[in-house]
Length: 93
Image (tube, rainbow, N blue to C red; front, top):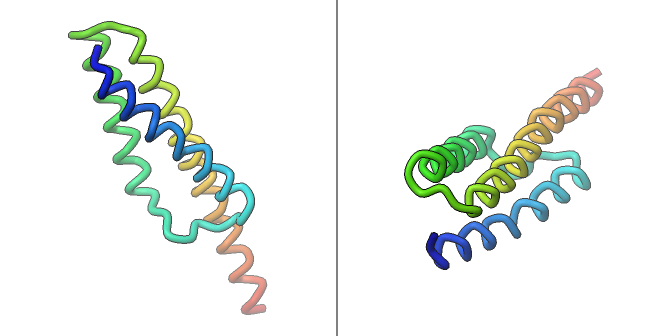
């Protein structure tokens, strides 16, 4: 376990609730990329696998929590894309 790894995960983890709240509030994807979110999820999954296979410690829970928050944000991206498309169709009608 590294204190730097913990700090990194806590800092990244602090950013995701802000991103989720913005997605909920604005109902827009403004500047977000689903591909980027999926890449982040894969990165956290790799961290989880590394922890489980080579260095099991409590930090795995920070990886899991961050991955869960990014997954929520990705789900909101999908929802917001549908809302944006529906609004676009209504604007053309």
